[in-house]
Image 1 (cartoon, chains in turn cyan, yellow):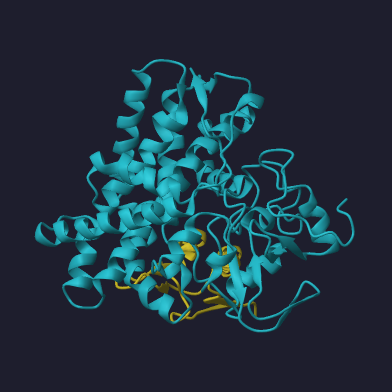
Image 2: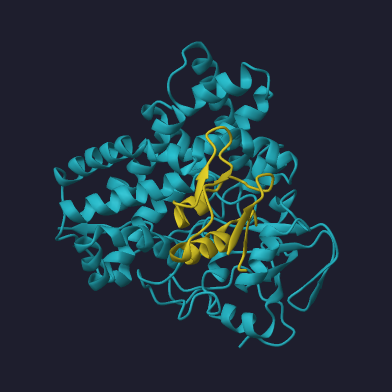
Length: 397
Length: 64
């Protein structure tokens, strides 16, 4: 029980790695919108009910503009440097930029990438099985699949991946040096700017080439806006999907009966992936919005300028939306989870993530039916970043 | 049951296509929702799920 009157410090500690902090259950009942103290001693509201989280993310009285002030990570430094990302804009400006991209991320369009992604997975798995054992599945499978898929999609030479991923990681580590994060952001913007020049001269079939042709050549977008957009696309789908691949494998190995059902019936996989997205709820510190108007929410008076932490980790474990929420169940109705966020900013790349997760899980357990952890489950190390997940996953087969 | 869609509000998330592929598609031009038809009795659950998961509130299902 939290002491009455005490303002808890965010983030609150977890007891079990995939369950939200136990106080969230208490908050949901007693004070579903509650004040917390942040990293720099400022205060914000922590929103723990599914319906309230959807309200904060879906209602235009709450803004994405300036939300970086309440973010834990070094991406604050990036924002302070003036990076223009449409994730930090509201409609209609947000809509203007997002609509330039949506045709490239429809379910149909991303489905066309399936053969390429399956071939990447196959190639990475072939290297993994011919290598030494035990092996860290995060390094040997999760990261390369996510990385090669993004390189293929965006049109970045794969030999550059280590360079830009290192800079992307700096931006999401919790205790990153803000100066270093700002420099990493500038490096990434410079890199993408050079990529635009290259694709302008020698266009290919990739997304960068298409956007250069559709938006830049036609004068529909300023070059700096296109560069910021591509910077976001390049890094948004790497660490996130890799975390879901590694952590999802761990969760499935921890539930062998359900894993066996999945292997026997491939039709169960899409829903199992929705349940993995919900159960893991990787985004445990973000997402944040800023109140534009005075709003009453969860019995609290929110005033303009207040920050609200609307985290999927709280919403996806609300028992009113998902009965017995801390139980992993591939058969439950999970599609209404908000692991990809909610509202106009909901993840644009979610069909890509689903495609990668489907390709990886179906190929991994088919090729390595005897896959197992190489260390006791309680020795698995977790991330220290914006994302909940396994840091490494030593496996054998 | 009757579905209506708000193309202006749509953000092209594609959740409706995943929930009810026989009822919804996305435009090749801008990814926004295309309503393929009204649900028959067997598709009502899917239609309600599409309404529930739409991130932009762009799908409204009138149960009457």
